Length: 513
Image 1 (cartoon, one colour):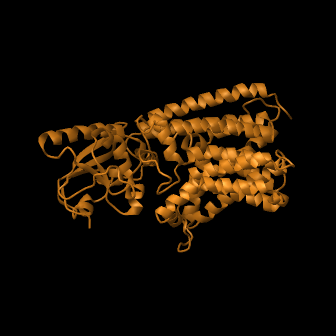
Image 2 (cartoon, helix red, strand yellow):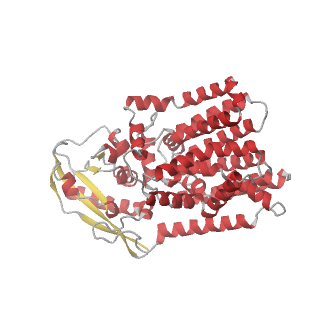
Image 3 (spheres, one colour):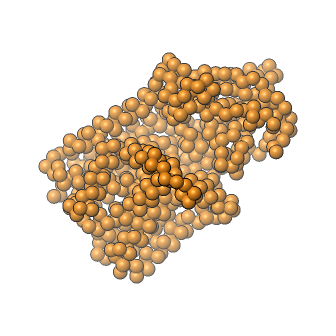
């Protein structure tokens, strides 16, 4: 059944406007999380690639902050918000292409309510933020090819470009080529004779040359780091990791959408899913199931992050949209199931904001030294306040001659070092330095925030949030002649203690062993 495009054109514009407005409000109100503030440091030194990820997220932040001159969370996240708005339209247009306007509309609604695509990649600035846009553009090109008997040269070239840019955002983008190869080998071998397939592959390879060059220069450190995270050779089966991965995927994708996705997959395997053409279904499965299957397999042995499978589940939203459209063909723009999807999404968003901004105290540890440990909501709470409090301490110390004006801020891990650089050092103009193992410092082990480094006789502050507490005396005692008793600054949320900040003054640096 076909539907008029006009009502949906206005509706999709309104959906994008309302969703983008919500994203902008959240981007402005919420402090940056651990990963986000770390990726902001990428923008401080644009490069061909970085320790953890390809360069796209750093380049995007550099653009939206005008070379890091716009120092506010909204501008750091603006790239994510814009990419989300564009992707929402691409999702709508792809759904319209493979079935009808109503399917595109429902797919866009599902995309706007999926936590991974709407919030994790659509508000928070992560490598997934630009990747999901290029992923959907590549997927759309591949679906155009699959649903046309004649191979489209321009579609193949577009697929090569979009996949290259997706991989330049996050290495997972290469799974698009895995999906394309799987589809061609299983269902369309004649297309392997098409030279444009190999031209497209060459375009993708050209796009990722910066990643290869940087890694050659840095001894393939990105590959080494990520291979350690997914290596299963020396591991035993841990069912708790697997269950955690399943639950995490369910939450990040959206509980109801996750269930509907697997209902669609079961129907496909039982050959009862008729809402999309076989070619469309084959492309969606080829580009999604390998990534999902590999990650589920790894999760039996290693603890991994649930959002890694986000692009795969996002692609399968087309199955859900077509399924809903086919079953509720007589209903209007908001079928009952979509209303439930939207309601659950709003409850999760409101509950999440309340947890971050106003939950009384902490859901983490109440140990005096590790207060708040395990409470991930604290990563996005209280950094503006501690910034103001530390500036007062620092100014008083300098005036009293207790610490020099150029005292360093040091830390042993990239978190909270990146938070301290964004919220504290930016305003106090103090030099920063990470002192620790490369696996703890990540990009800070390669990049120096300023030319000047610690030299014998220098003093430094070490700011330790109790939710990431470590023994400063044991760690830095051998490196400094004297460490003062820390100042303790309690931090409250909802009227109750949430965590503490320990401010250590480290005197007379000696040398790194």
